[in-house]
Structure formats: structure tokens, C-alpha cells
Image 1: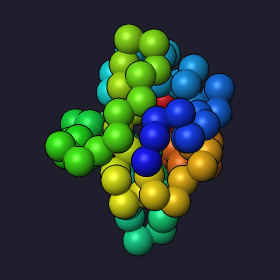
Image 2: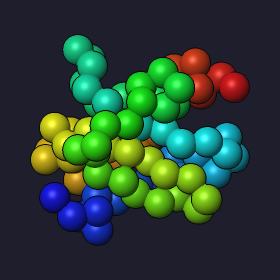
Image 3: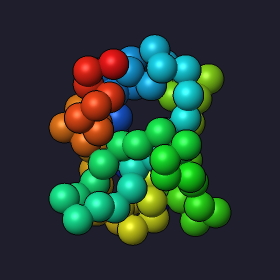
Length: 81
């Protein structure tokens, strides 16, 4: 999987830059979800996407299927911060 093959919606990129921390797209029973790495630490097998000064890590299991990372993947509480 190539990083260039995954599109990151501008709203997600803006949120990550605004928060100033790294995040990870992880696998949950509800599907792909973006969580801070303090909750879901990155793994060596993750795909890393640079977003400004931060990194969005994508689980290799999700990266196989994801073409676009959008705001629907943001953790609900993150939307209220």
C-alpha cells in the first residue's frame, strides 16, 4: 500500500493540524476510526501519512481497503473538542 493512494479529506487534515498531535486510523467493531495515539499507539506495520508537523498512522489492515480518510472516521468526542 502506497501513502499516495490514500486521500485525506481537508477537514481531517485541518483537525489534525489544529490539535497538534499524531493520530491513528485503527480497526474497531464499528469500522475505521481515527484516535489519538495516546489511545491507540502506532504499530511498526502502520502506514504513516504526514499531515503538516504531525503524522496520521493507518493500520495496515485498514490501509488495504481505505481510499479516502474523511471526517466520519473522527472519534465522536473529537468532534466536540
